[in-house]
Image 1 (cartoon, rainbow, N blue to C red):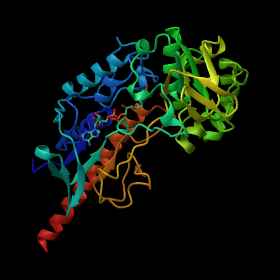
Image 2: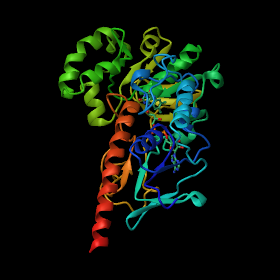
Image 3: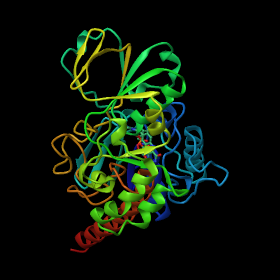
Amino acid sequence: MDDLDAVIVGAGPAGLASAASMRALGLKTIILEKAGAVGSVWRRHYDRLHLHTDRGHSGLPGLAMPQTYARYPSRAQFVEYLEDYATRLDLRPVFNANVLAVRRNGRRWQIDAGQNSASAPIVVVATGWADFPYRPTWPGLDSFQGDIVHSSAYRNPDNYAGKRVLVVGFGNSGGEIALDLANAKINVALSVRGSVQILPRDLLGIPILTWAIAQRYLPARVSDFINAPVIRLALGSIEKLGLRRAAKGPRRMIEEDGRVPLLDIGTVAKIRDGSIEVRDAIERFTPDGVDFTVSGAETFDSVILATGFRADLRGLLPDAGGVLDDHGKPLATGQVTNEPGLYFCGHIASPTGQLREIGLEAKCIAKLAKSYLQSEEGLSDARMTK
Ligand SMILES: Cc1cc2nc3c(=O)[nH]c(=O)nc-3n(C[C@H](O)[C@H](O)[C@H](O)COP(=O)(O)OP(=O)(O)OC[C@H]3O[C@@H](n4cnc5c(N)ncnc54)[C@H](O)[C@@H]3O)c2cc1C
């Protein structure tokens, strides 16, 4: 494996797209994946999950999603697509290859993965953030007698029959899990800490992503300003539902704070008809429930933390300088980093869809990697002729 151009860590959408884009430019790549199959994270997501972004804008470079799929493909369809993608583009990831560390070794990167260790001048870290569920803590948490899981461990409402459940967090996972529970007639409340933004998944019959892409060259403030009345009309008053609309519009929220608004697929209607109750922030846990900051104490049997993910890559990249922030999050994704030959793919929150952005990043990384290799070759040729 000495003649490799690039090692890609992870066989999720970002790793597969990176490998395909590099191969298309003639680079010799290998993908190391710790799980036993491609798209391992999507195999574990909750049962009812469908893409929130439409099929036409969620395919990866080189292979569109089949026309036979629904406008918003199911989780199973997306997994099938990723499998098909790897097969049709002949990507052949090495499975059960857990990358423990990536270190610079002269002009190459040494990828420590036990018996699957490899080295190459280019490395692409496409490890996603699923390994880093964020679990905030509250006073009294340890005293709570009920069960608490992170949203990444939630599968379906089966375990919650007859229980009173609190879902914490108003992101897409929180909104959809609360909806899933409400549809199963489970007594559910949703704790919403601050002000929020909500977008309908479709506007005037067109996917919201299509609108966002059409407006991508407008300044965020301008597109938020233009869209506000139409979105208000589509969703009705959210203030009447006990929610506070954020002063910052949806696009600024994503671009400035990395927070993705709720793409509504029915949660708002369930709040409106009372099947999902809205509560404010949690002040503390009690043995049989939680004490909310404004509305006071209530009993709950189960709590689901839809509190997101926070990738920390400091363990994976122990020596890399100037590429991660203080919390281990990449400073740049889909572009050059402070370390020549090291790239990150997929570490983004994008107003125009993360899968779409992953595809764009992968193509950009492939071009950057190719010109980096050419400049390295030029350097070594120059050294040889001296
Ligand atoms: C519930 C949910 C729904 C989403 N829905 C959408 C949507 O509808 N549209 C959209 O555009 N985006 C969506 N996203 C966001 C994003 O597109 C997905 O999270 C996507 O899977 C990210 O791809 P990825 O390849 O970066 O990461 P992942 O899919 O997480 O893949 C990373 C891969 O790297 C592997 N890996 C990690 N560490 C190592 C290691 N040390 N060694 C070897 N392998 C490793 C993992 O096993 C995994 O296979 C959603 C996210 C979530 C959580």
